[in-house]
Image 1 (cartoon, rainbow, N blue to C red):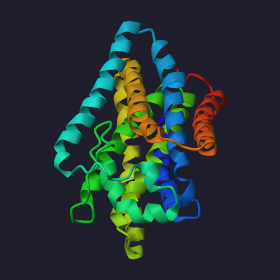
Image 2: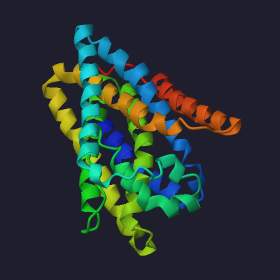
Image 3: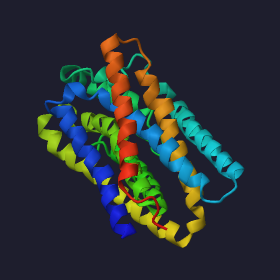
Image 4: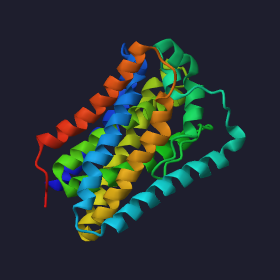
Length: 288
């Protein structure tokens, strides 16, 4: 039963996020995509602090060891970001728009999509993910980076499901919402403004997203045989979610807005948190 839940959750997070991104990017809802940042930040923080960390600390492993693992995870993701920025430093352009700026409405998103995707490349190296601008070959660099990142997401989702079903679905939700803005950048790069390339781009990114299921399968096989790793993997998953929320998403929300925009931002942040809490209340707490 765990394996079925893991495969279902990873496919929802991996492929579902691509199709939601496509709908938001090129559908009538494009003007609302900026709210995905707040929703994703809320879901990631709630999953880490309300679901993953308590589950890990209740495992019986020494609290100081788990806290050190959490700290090491945060440092690891920080160093990955620094390494990626250093590697691409010669390409970085400080005036490129951030994700929410590039998505204020559909017209602005289409105008700046390619530039945003290049800027996004320097911010989305998490859990081993390297998202580079495409250089021929249909953007295979983008797809390869996506596949690696999605595989890591699958392992994290699998570890959450093996701790408890409710925790697994909360992790699925968190991965789903934080991958939507990222996949919007992927699609913008791969179709490069050409409607003829749109279907091909959607298929390619969907296949990369499906690698999440392979990561889930690998995580299930690994953790079932080495169950003692589970508390540490939960700490690493929490550090990944916290780092993405605080280093990537929250800074994009920290800008001067009017009262109505600020209220909407806070509302969507709370909606993201509320969804995670609701998922936790809806299912049984422990699978073991």
